[in-house]
Image (cartoon, rainbow, N blue to C red; front, side):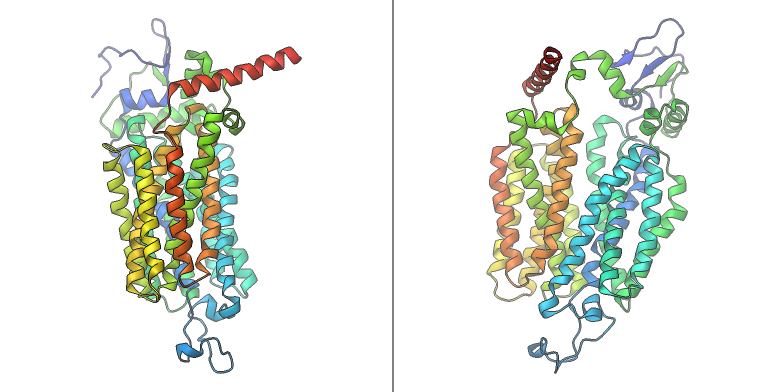
Length: 502
């Protein structure tokens, strides 16, 4: 524990002080040197905010049960003979509106509409969270919209209304995960942030397991949408009031006093102490004053495209992320085609993800990023190809699907870390935004692949995994300083040209 009578360590970066003047340091240095990088305060905050990822799973994966293949009052051989068979209404949306046979593709369209909304929502609510609403305000708004849209979905009068409401739910869900991730990781110190960020995925798996339980006790798809929306309401009432706004957001909006109250609360809860003459400032503001070269390169995707090296990296990492999304979401949704116990299949997929995240964290300590990416992509691809070789759906395909999800979940976890390391800090956010959008496109495509049925989904997923692994050979191991220097040179050259032209 630090105390006021101890000498103050040399801080870097920092704004120098003289005599009794206050010393302003960045958030990362404040956490590392005084408040604590990850203590009881951050643990509680991590748990509270990451619950939102469980809600994300409820709203995302609910279609597995709500849109499942309907129950017929006839033999399997006569399913598509409408004159001799009848759907049992209320069991699923497919039974409610006859989304079978030639209309089966409409199930995939609804699911794609949700992911399209999620892609739109990530952009909209990302802007809201950075500006006037803040992280906590945006999280509150997305939970309100999720609750209302989820409840309204249970009363959908038609297929068109159902699709529209799923699109709206997708918009709010896209912002939900983004804000939860920021609130969970921003008050964590730099050396702990990566591990904590990837740990949020565990809550998504927990939410998927909870969904299976809710689906088992629900009598119809309308009841399922109703009960799966209640946790969002409970989260609004019981949890969000105890979540603190991002101290970085307060600093960006020149509210240093509130940021200091939060950081002092963190230090107190963690058993630490912040000297009176130490205050907060934005990390990037200090860094720019300390390293003028960083001002020369802009945080733009255009800058990334100017450099042949980063342009190539962006292309391949974007395609790999798109393929991994197709496989991950596709295998998760494809359980409806396996003719096995649906509840058990969903739970097994969710359980398979947890050891994948843990093993990835361990493997990163002794195995390079590139070989691990290639290996997990290929492992998922091989199991998907094996699944396509079975002529009928059943337990064998379910096992292949579970193993495919296990390997691809590891890839998902790994790509988050790997992509961040492949590019300089100054363009990292722009790159991650681009790669995330590619992942959402893959999620939009996945339900349409699932709608093909039979062997085709496994064939497509296998091809995506194997091709994605091959593309991994074109990526380097990590980012290097010469690349940053090259990008700075490119940016400076453009600035000089502008001056000459002016």
